[in-house]
Length: 301
Image 1 (tube, rainbow, N blue to C red):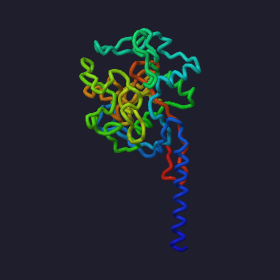
Image 2: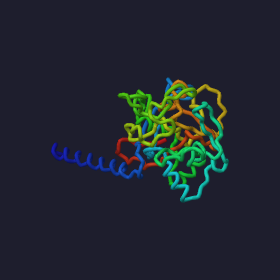
Image 3: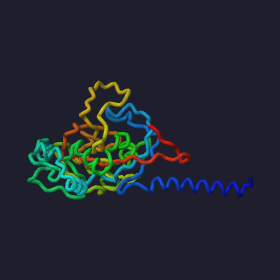
Image 4: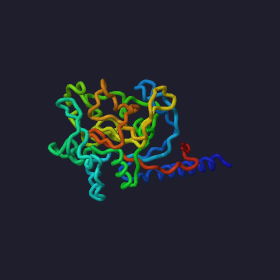
């Protein structure tokens, strides 16, 4: 075979492979981003006790929504189905009073009025809150999606890179004098100075996107994941696993790094599946096609 012919064949092969890759990434559902998956190191040795020990997994390809589900998107679900959230059925839900620094059950607090009916209505472009894990599951079923697995969430927050930065966007909360996330400024719960411009939730995407194109992967609202909360294998902490306790990730506008540094990419917490609060929301995920043979690498769990 001549060198010229060999070069032409290689060029054609690379073009075809590039086309396969494009086909697999261009069909992402509207509002979602494709993640190729691959080998990924979960956790850290430098965080809280529940963030280690680190371990390596193979992540399958998946799609993840660019931002948390908004109030407007959740309203469409409610209007289409007539669904009643658990907060609506219970008649009250968790609200944090920033003036006295305490949590309480606010009568009539719902996804539409997250701090109670006597407080302002939730804005359409803000993340929906006052939704339980069960409510999020109902939305996912209606939308034909699912909640992200905890490992998928960390993979996406880390921009598919095992060499993680502290936050999804970088190493610093404030860059060039601007906040990169909606979190607590001051000393929680005694004082807050709202330097980032928001006392409560902020519009999705307000603080920009990470390298992967996702917004709100730190701060604003905690996000439900599919998983039951547990300690990682090899962690010596004694913990009785409870299937009612579900993982939440990402931190919220109530997170003060001196008290709750929950907006780091490896930070983990949990809440009971029926719980709803003014600082918890969710985003949606979907399985993506496996990579074809010859296209970078094949992903398996």
